Amino acid sequence: MSIEPTPPVEAPDTAPAAVSIAREGPIAWLIFDHAARRNAMTVDMWRAVPERCDELAADPDVRVVILRGAGDQAFVAGADISQFQTQRTGSGGSYAEATDNAYAAIEHLPKPTLAMLHGFCIGGGLAIALSADIRYGEPSTRMALPPAKLGIGYATDGIEKLVELVGPSVAKELVYTGDLHDADTCLRWGLLNHVVPKGQLEDFVRSQAMTMASRAPLTQLAAKQAVAGDPEATKTIARCMASNDYAEGVAAFMEKRQPTFRGN
Image 1 (cartoon, rainbow, N blue to C red):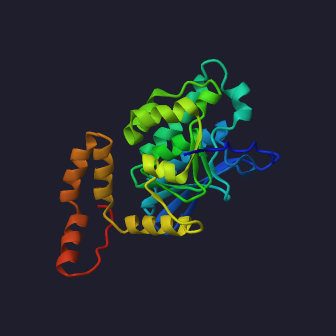
Image 2 (tube, one colour):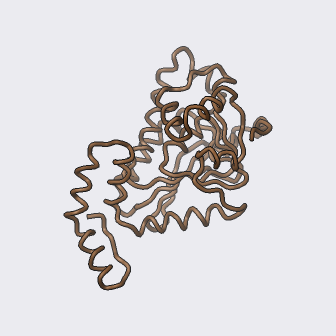
Image 3 (cartoon, rainbow, N blue to C red):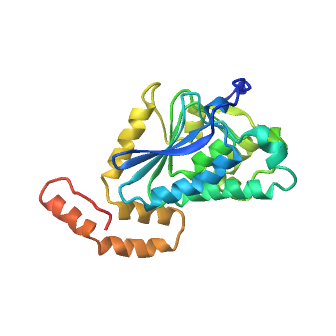
């Protein structure tokens, strides 16, 4: 159901805005940190996302990436509207390029990506979440696409991605109204994979990530490519069948032990 809109941000914007990485064994956290504005994305944050994703893609020790917002109020409460008059004027070409590059970098990370959605996930924040493979929420999760409240034309690629996930009718309702929706509605519509009880989200997502990190990376990559319609999936499937991980998986099954996959 739709709910009351988010109240305006009143905190002074004094803290630096950043996109950072925190590593935890085989998982890495990609953190959107602009707490003074509920992690609203500045143009510099958008531009930092591809750099961080390249770093994560190149790190062989990272098996799974979790996206999260800093603090406990929001995942990402959209783009930083205070920058729109200077950064998003006219056609907004350079700004649109920065956002598109950020979404693409997340979408094409060759590793499982999980979005941990506590609190507000709005506009550009929802687009970031849609770029991840899987989305998990809790009762505090609130989602909206508010471009119709700002007069912004929503990108075609973003609309297509939304329609693939929730269908054309729900996509139109989200965009036409711009309303904020609660976690149960988002789960029913398919925007969320799971809603877990309050206070359990981080532990749940970490557990899911650790489970995925223990599985065969090439199998996961092949599935990710196949779902995306990437023609490279056929080559990756062939790599799976010729890999040391395939031999290890079969041996572990026959020996009744847990396999140790290395991604080759």
